[in-house]
View 1 (cartoon, protein in one colour):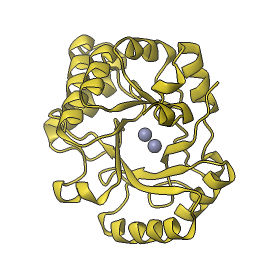
View 2 (cartoon, rainbow, N blue to C red):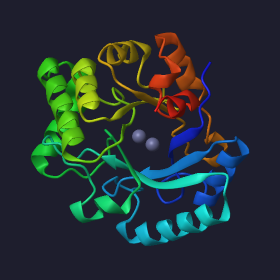
View 3 (cartoon, rainbow, N blue to C red):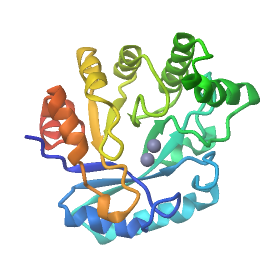
Length: 249
Ligand SMILES: [Zn+2]
Ligand SMILES: [Zn+2]
């Protein structure tokens, strides 16, 4: 039912993936994909975020591979982190143009903009499961931070909405539609859930199914995401990495 031709979310050794850029590209070619994005973790990821000093080297490798292969297009991307309640992400303004595509998602173990942001985004969300935090207030703060980021930055894909923190999926879907951002159905950890996808679909959101591969063998492995999309009844032309979507625009 779904023919997916692009993998927009893959990691390499520039963050904590296992392969090189070339390894991911070869894997994508072997699976017959027409496009792949290299999207290592943002600079503020503690321990394994990509380095600003690697941007030039990564761009050179990607340009070389784009010249070498005529059967695949390679995008230089990043999976940026949310770092403040005001929707800041961990790409300094002057580096926004360094990327062909920007993905953004919520992750823990990230250096926040300020201590206050650390408390709200990481501290309170960490304590949430103990039941001592006003859950609804926290959920709204999480949602507001993410929606602000979508309107502040040229983000094309919101990765794994609902993973790691609770969100108001309807409000987030509305913001995604308004800012032309695709919501990711992540084939590696199964977020968004079928329930979230159904709500976002009602709001008119577009989706993208990504492997979130951390090793070359996983590039183009969309199976778990396809199952979620199928269960939620997402039509192929609403999935931006499908063959049908490309036909549709
Ligand atoms: Zn992620
Ligand atoms: Zn990822």
